[in-house]
Image (cartoon, rainbow, N blue to C red; front, side, top):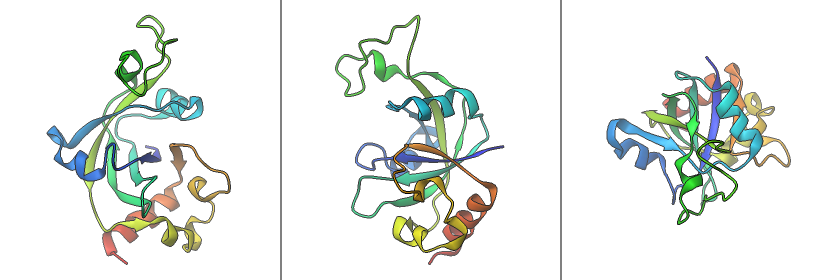
Length: 155
């Protein structure tokens, strides 16, 4: 089992949206970075844990715990000419972009980025490194346990 931090802009898909979705599950679409895509395509497996992170908002932070519940499959938004994520170079025969399905597991207490930065156990977290902008990053077991403990305990 592996652990991941996956960023979503809450005005596009929030953790509350996932909780309200059928079976509390959504397709993780719109990833347009090759390294993040490769994580989904080559390393993510059903059962992996996810820190669902709200980005590009007033208070960025971990909004909940989720789980990868599918293997990788072509991201349908790359073929939709009306989509912001349309990619004219993608074809059905050779898709360029990948989705996985993510299911909400637990909401917990919101963990703001500012608090994460003050937690010594997270100092090596990829998210907190200078210049880190990837929408999907690996999380170590100790980092996962630290965030889970905080989400369950509150501030």
